Length: 448
Image 1: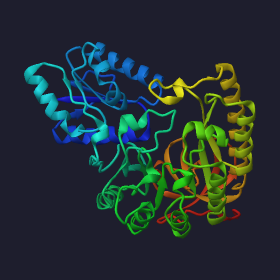
Image 2: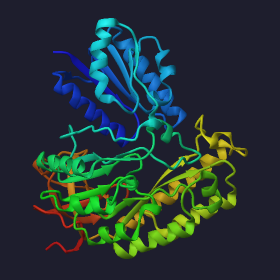
Image 3: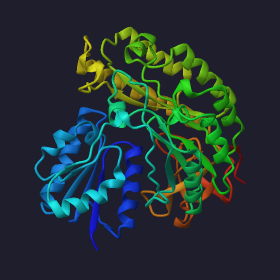
Image 4: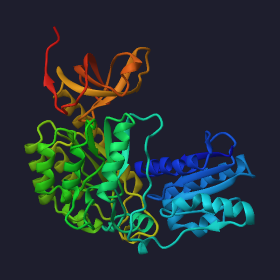
């Protein structure tokens, strides 16, 4: 039996797609082995969101080649899509496929075995208008299943290379989404994370169907207890979407809404599609509709030309809108993007100081948010064993990380857990009982 090993760099979408590519190999009777072992075929799924992503991808490719010079080395993903010629120049790379036509990998491998000539299977992603179906019936070692619902992005933010790596917006057929969600539930998953390159834009290219309708259709799947949206833009939080969230018993109390900057002038330079006034109005409406909602966000600091005053606007906006946690990134020049060519690039020391300030703020906000749930009962789905024997760790619907005493058999089950000590990054709880169905709400309860 032939063997295959995978290494995935980058985002959740890449991890999803690696699982999908593995399904193709599995159907062709391959055995999956660890990347550190010798394999007949190595598949490296690359990232290009930053220059560092490119560098790490090249390092992993070279490592695979050194480890087994006789193996067939296949490179796929975003870096492969944008820089296929560069990758083909690395001695030992045999097959390059970008972010489409992954189903051709096995065909290319057969061709390579016969001809022993490197194959560049990358084509122009911008011409692609159809969603490439890559099904994953189950995942290895995960209690939450990712479900990819769309591909590509039409935004072309000035700092981002991703539209050139992923192409324009393509939504997956809603029937296929519901079909795969049902398969995942039948495989034992209680929670599904809707994911994509621009997840909240789902349906923009479909007739008479949108994200709100998809959420309604997923709500009707028996056995699906939690629906989580990996990311959604403020501009995509329409009144209809907010109404669906408010009425749903399955969409969790956690949304990731990228901010990037709290300054209108910086947002304009970034070519973002909203103003701070609009963002504020949407978030305020969300909080009113969904009590207890956790809103996490991404922030880029040190964008070209960012003044101390503009950074302060961002800081103040975050404080005033009570995000529950931030993912903070110093601006990184991405070769090939408009922002990389802008004047007034910010000094690295200034960037690092601003990152430090926002990380400190994020820690404070996370602790404040968690403290609201001390002595409340949350529904936690344990995902793994804790650092001590007899301890389980999992996530509540509002994405608070909770540890509590429990048996391994509870992993993947819905557990009612009282929060004894709230904190960040970990909350300590006490198991009360196991339930069959999630409410995705918290209860005030005192242990007797």
